[in-house]
Length: 107
Image (cartoon, rainbow, N blue to C red; front, side, top):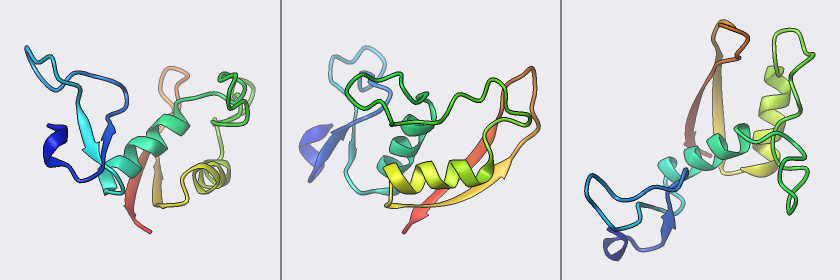
């Protein structure tokens, strides 16, 4: 509930508070959960997809062997979410999808 949060920020992806709830789900700003959701949002957007922020996100990995490099992931995270200190663990590429576990801690 947003009233109990000091600085509420809508959760991403946008969702309602819970089952049968008509309230919007929020998270406290500047918490590890909020920083992690910001990193997840940046990593889920392809550069050029957002008209208002065409440089936000990751480059198209279609023709990159092994997907997006760890260096690129770290650089993109640092540019768009400098509050995050990332620990990346690359998983295997399964069914042409790159999976990367991202652990966010206080910077």
